[in-house]
Image 1: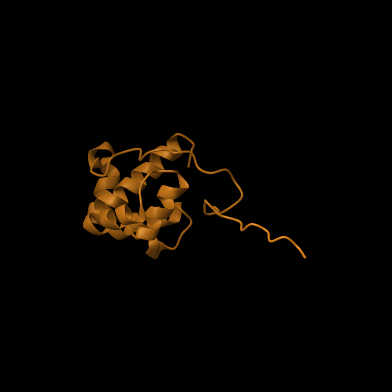
Image 2 (image 1 turned 30 degrees about the vertical axis):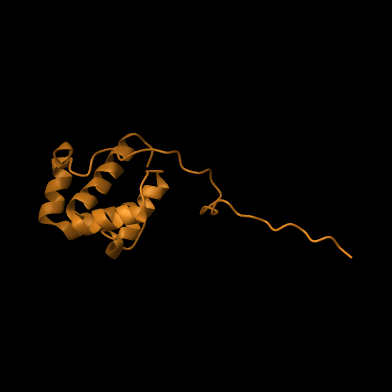
Length: 116
C-alpha cells in the first residue's frame, strides 16, 4: 500500500507569460488630469472613437476594445497598478472619456520614460 499524498494547495494564480511579475506602480496621472495633456483631452472630447482606436493599437488589441473594462484591466495589471475589476468597471462606465484619456496619457508618459 502507498501512503496517501497530501494535496497541493495553490495560493496564487499563475500569471500569463514566463516573465517576472510586474512591479507595483501607479497611474502616471490622475483620472481627471486632462490639463496635463490637452492634446489627448481634445482628441478624446472631439473624436472619442479615434482615441479609443489609438489606445487599442498601442496595446496591440482590436480597435473595438479601446474603451472596454477588459482593456483598462489588462493595462492596469500589465503595469502593476493597484485596483480591481470592480474599480475598472465603475470608472469605465461612469466616466469613459476620463478613463480613456488617463490610459492614453499613461501610455504616452511610459513611452517617454521608455517603460512602455
